[in-house]
Image (cartoon, rainbow, N blue to C red):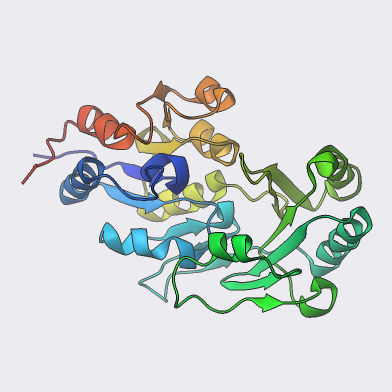
Length: 277
């Protein structure tokens, strides 16, 4: 029985993962069933490699992964696969850091692939970015001095009253070189990557590699960093808990991340019966 294989792209937070940052049993079994049926599953996330790899192994994946919203596209289990790393120029990063110092933001964090640089020591921020005890240690200290190579991403933890000012400064002075987005509450972190980087760029490369046409790409997401990917995919699916802008570009809306939204959609769309053993 010849089934057309699909490429299934999964965002992590708010999509594949429940609010407890776990993959529900039903969704996991459905994804495993999809893989068994020959479909290709990839993770496409804003997270770095080190904070996604556990979920990758949990699903037994052997596919490329899209990290940092497309600024890093690599294959965790095949080092012959052509890595695409697109960091932003360090000169731009240093200018942005300078502006942040002037505005007296709470904190700034830079990531160079899996290396993390933190301007000011902060227990809570370290808690978010260190997924396990084995994570590489943070380099803590003034980013002006410590950051010496092009960063994959820059994250600003601004004071509430500075958010608008910082974002318009980024638009006015750096729009030709970078993209920026705001994380949802409670953090309101501004995340900056190189211009032109988004999950659709990563998905395009992976789809080309597996020779899968756009109409057989199923992508799931919930936030504004999923917009391009959901728009690009032939079958763009917004989670029930997703933002309205995403639901507007999606072809389908499924249940929330707390209601097995990913699993239920795949069961129906790909006609999968997940075994509940």
